[in-house]
Amino acid sequence: MTDADLYALIQSDPTAVAAYAVSDDDACAARCSVIAPLLRQPVDAAKLRKILAVRDRWGGLQRVANNFASPDPPYKQARTLIDLITAGDSIDVDEPAVAEGAPVLVQHGLLDASDLQAMAALANVSQIITQQQVGAAREWFRVTGGATNATT
Image 1 (spheres, rainbow, N blue to C red):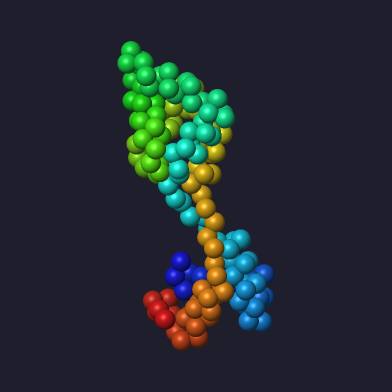
Image 2: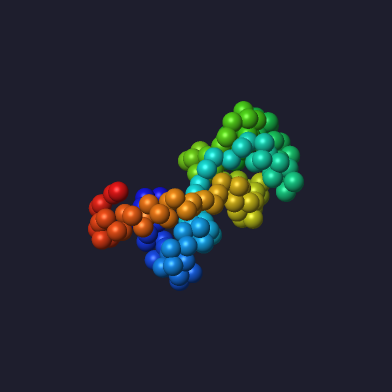
């Protein structure tokens, strides 16, 4: 998040503005950490496998992915997801192979909308805004007067 983005975030929230106005950068940073947009990150394969197993989806995906006689779709989409998870790497759930395959898996009853939401939730992480970042946004505004293309 740039200084300008953080300044705009502060200005968008009355609680953050109030803390900012009295130079309580710690309180302002804490509030901004709550209201900042979530970031997307790759999901640990073990966490993804666990959530699918707990939701009773792992076995069905494996059965389709391991049955070469399965119709395609959903064979290819199930095989791709199983291969990515069993490789053990982090998985970008927004990657086209996963994101485009997920609706097909839902269409064929291997996943449902709540499964997709649970998978997506694993990829969402909160931004942690620090007091130093609030100070930098304050300095950016002081120096530039809020010019949209300026940096400190």
